Image (cartoon, rainbow, N blue to C red; front, side):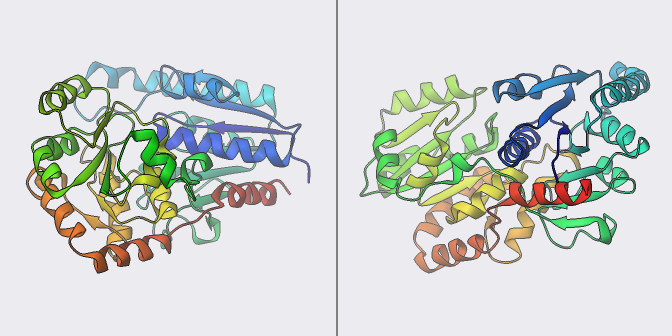
Length: 366
């Protein structure tokens, strides 16, 4: 079955954009002559990231409902109507075989119109607790690709396909790269290494949980690869420069994530859906500190899907400044616990999610 044209819609954050690009890459691999068009939200991250990955994108004038009273909410009905009209025009003109939504503001009007036009539609839900939009869309789409089990209470059972979340393959291929990782970050192979990563923008809580304990790190002979994000980079750099510590590598953003994963003995991370999917494949002892600033507390629910099976440790954001660093030390002192966490998190890994999703796409188009 040849698939000639596909629309992929959604974005807003890396957690939506990276899976979308991974799906597009797999489609291109299986159907070299395929035409893929992305539909995003004007002014959002996807409008630059998608062209960088080599794909065409058009933007809709759409945004989300603000949680507080604001003038932006007054324009929302007009944005929705405008987006539905524009999505209809794009879809009619492009005439896709299938439309895939990955979450984010643009996917709702795009999938709504595609369903109305009787085009096969697929939602890819990254989280263990779906957002309102995907719950509504699931009633009319053809299939829902999920990354977690037991989502029948949110979606029609007959539409659910357990595929996992597509991850960037270059990031999770760490086999045999440990020595290169030490060399790249200028670290010693004889010391235990902690990787702290707070998402693409960094995480204030994680930064402040470690910045006051840098001297203690030295005392325990531990090393730190620390992605602090661009917002607090200058502040954290001033502090680390003053302390003149060895074995503390401060990064605004880690471009060679696979080398950071390879060098790490223990990982401290936020609990975004794609980060968790990567961590399951990496298979290292992990402490998760879910961000409290996401809709419907997604990250805590994502983390709990691992914690309940003893595949990760959860520290609440509200207590992290006090409890996170002592938990890191306790975990380094408990080899048995570290081994157990590493074994259990590996059991959660789904490595070929992009292939699984493309198989669902092929079955829908049939």
